[in-house]
Image 1 (cartoon, rainbow, N blue to C red):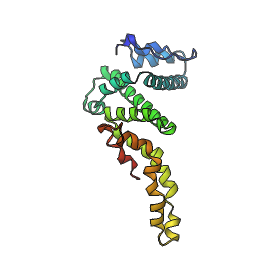
Image 2 (tube, rainbow, N blue to C red; image 1 turned 180 degrees about the vertical axis):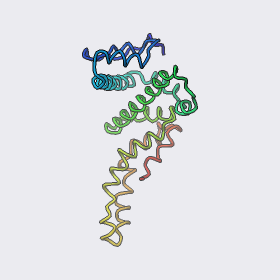
Image 3 (cartoon, rainbow, N blue to C red; image 1 turned 30 degrees about the vertical axis):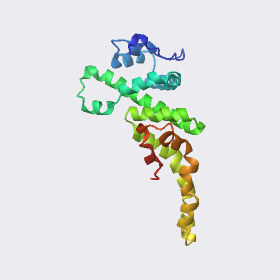
Image 4 (spheres, one colour; image 1 turned 45 degrees about the vertical axis):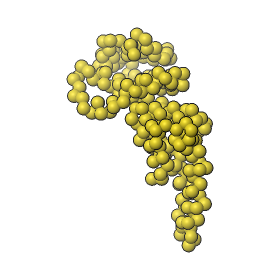
Length: 215
């Protein structure tokens, strides 16, 4: 995407920098920081950058919701980015571009995680399907597994696996397993089963059942 076509979100007037500086062809990190420090202290600059970073994340989520197809195209272009970054020996003059790409990748993953969590919380099959397909497209299926395990599997297992039941009853383990653990997938993972194994399933999503294994 050409820089001239990119519209960065507007920040508050109190920001100590001009957001359009980031999109200039001759943008230089050191010069940017030096110029800002002529006007404000480093702590204030960091605070403003953190604030604008949050605005960028919100804008990214809105962009994903507005035009999913464009997001998938961008995600496809980032496949293998981790390997590429590890193999590159980057001259100092190219460091800015590498940092920008890494930052975009991190923002995409954060936005995806937020959307997947929203889909799970609101039982939105379309959001869940789109997110999981995008995780597969950008080769980040392990991140999807980890998120599902953290927000869905672990809380349930922590609640039903009680050591006292096993210790106080001769058949405690059997009772706990048959009464609670076997209910987890059919009763609490209906949406994930629909996405990964139902009529709308995709071969790209076959990895997800690993996330349903308690750690």
